[in-house]
Length: 287
Image 1 (cartoon, rainbow, N blue to C red):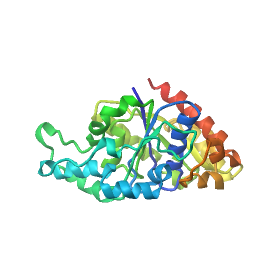
Image 2 (image 1 turned 120 degrees about the vertical axis):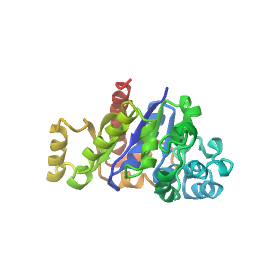
Image 3 (image 1 turned 90 degrees about the vertical axis):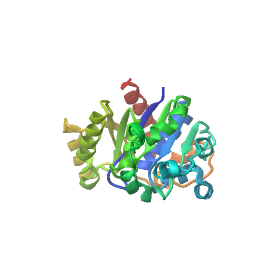
Image 4 (image 1 turned 135 degrees about the vertical axis):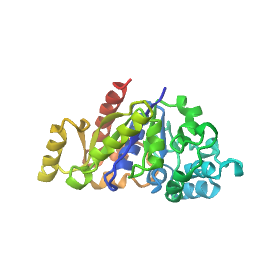
């Protein structure tokens, strides 16, 4: 069974997608894991990082993105389903030559419009059209092909995000260690717990990932101390992902040979590899 983990923060620009993609690539290239990235964020950043903008445009024009899965549900029985899992699934998606076992289910800008309309979805016979269960039903046939499934969620707690959480064993929260970026963490915790309780299941708080870290900066050190000392918050991963141009540039879709080349500068490779090792331990402890 795959370990399914969502990545979420209510604030944009905190390194959520960078963390998701780096974990996926490290899990594959450094630890030999089979990984599926599910891009639920309509900003499509994880998608374009992994397959490039032109390939994404071609898929989007053909309707081979997750937006089609949700629009099928909105159309109901009035139209034949258009979502094709195999055509949407992008095999060996990473541009890093050393990473061969990362697959992708791509996102679309159209998810912005779909989000609000999903709330009006008619329940269907025996409530079969549960709007938070669409993703689980669609990708269930391929989950056993992977060791890890990483879901890049939108920066909100709407129905699309709940689709990701519905199939998740747990979630991580990447955050810059400042007041604005960490402000929404209790809201995430309470909403996820309430959703899990409604399903009579559990969705574990795997941990908080410190991103764009500036060592020695007073606000960063103070915020990290506060996060670590608060018993009500998720545990904080020991590894800090430093702020740096190389890590910022890693979101560009560029063909490259190795992960060390991609993340080499300013300690990025070591940081992401150490984080991935911690991540594996934390996730496997959930089992």
